Length: 456
Ligand SMILES: Cc1cc2nc3c(=O)[nH]c(=O)nc-3n(C[C@H](O)[C@H](O)[C@H](O)COP(=O)(O)OP(=O)(O)OC[C@H]3O[C@@H](n4cnc5c(N)ncnc54)[C@H](O)[C@@H]3O)c2cc1C
Image (tube, rainbow, N blue to C red; front, side):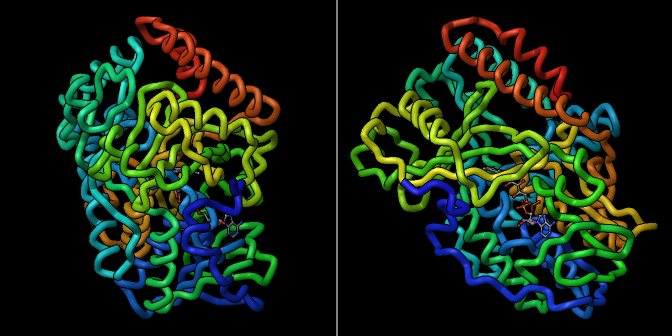
C-alpha cells in the first residue's frame, strides 16, 4: 500500500516534471499565488477575456499539489456552509441565485474540460446520499422536505428499495439524489488546466514559495513580484502566509483507494452510473467509483494539527486506513477481501463561519477565493470567473452573488483552536456511534458541536 506520495490521482498519471521556479524580481499585471483550481481557473478566464494581460502563477510545489490534486472528485453544486446563511444576509432570492450559479458551474467545468481536450474521467451521475441509522433517516427526510421547498435543488427522496437499486448500501433506510454532480479524476483536471493556461500564455513558476502577500506585491524565496493585482489562492496553506495564521483553519481530510474491483463485486453493488456517494453521519464519508473500477472513499482522518501545521505529501496515520476500510466494509460487505492500494490526505481551508468567499479589495489590489471546506471543486470555477469580473470591472450577475466580499472573523488563537477542533470531531464521532446503535433522533452532542463551531 502506498502512503502519501501526494495522492492516488497523481500516482495514476505520474508525478509531474517540475516547471522552472521564478528567477528573480518580476513585474506583472496579475500575480496569482497558488496553482490549484482557484488560481488556474482565475488565470484561465482572465487570459481568455484579455489576452494581453501579463499573468503568472507562483506555486510552492507543482500545479495541483494541494487539495485540487487530492480530493474526492465530487464536482457538485453544494454551497459551502449552506444556503440559509445567505437568506439571513441577502434574502431568499440571492440564496437561490447562488444555487443556480452553482448548478451552472458544474456544467461550465464539464464544458471547458471538453473544449480544452481535458480528459478527467468526468461522468455526470448526480449526488447520492444515504441514511442507514434511525436518526439519520429522520434528518434525511427533514432535509429532503426542506430542499424541495427551494428552487434549483431538483432533489429526490428515495425509499430504501429504490435507493438500494441505485447503490446497494447495506442497511439503507432512505436516500436522496440530485442530478447536479459529476465524478471526476481530480489530478487530471488540475494537470489539464495547467496546460491550458500555459497555452494561453500564462507562466507557472513552480518550486517557488510566497512568504507574504501585501498590496501589489508578493514576496517569495526566489524574488519579489510586483503587480497591479495579486490573487491569493492558497486555501488550506493560507495560514503559512505572514499575518494570516488565523484566517482559515487548515483541516485534513483523507482517502483510501482500493484495487480495481471485479465485476462480481460491482454486480452486487450496482453503482453503475457515475453517482458519487455520501452519507448522513456527522463525520460524513464521501466516495466515488473510479473510472478504473476502484472505490475511493474519504472522510476526516486526523482532522487538525496543532498550530495549523499543514501536511507533507499526504502522509496519513495508518489508523485512518482502518477507519475508512471499516466504513467501506459496513456499506459494502462484498468489498471485505479487497486490498487498499493507496492512502493519502489533503488540507482544506475552514473559515470560522464555514462559508466560502471570493472578493477583491480595490485599494490593495488583493483578490482572494477560498474557505471552501470540503466543497470547492465546483466553487473554485465560480471563484475564478468572479475574480475575473471583479478585476476587469465587469458588472456581471456573478459579482452580485451573496458570497462576494463576505468577511469573516478569525479563528481563536492556540491552544483553543486545537482543543475546539479535537473536541468537535470527538463529539461528532460520539454522536454517530450513538445514532448507529439506534438512537432515534439527532444526538444533542452533535447539535451542541454545531453551535460551538459556527456550523449551525
Ligand atoms: C482530501 C480532500 C477531499 C476533498 N473532496 C472534495 C470533493 O470531493 N468535492 C469538492 O467539491 N471538494 C473537495 N475537497 C475540497 C477541494 O478539493 C478544494 O476546495 C479545492 O481543491 C481548493 O482549490 P484551491 O485551488 O483553492 O486550493 P488548493 O488546491 O489547495 O491549491 C492551493 C495551491 O497553492 C499552493 N500554495 C499554497 N501556499 C503557497 C505559498 N505560500 N506559495 C506558493 N504556493 C502556495 C499550494 O501548493 C497549492 O497547490 C476536498 C479536499 C480534500 C483535501
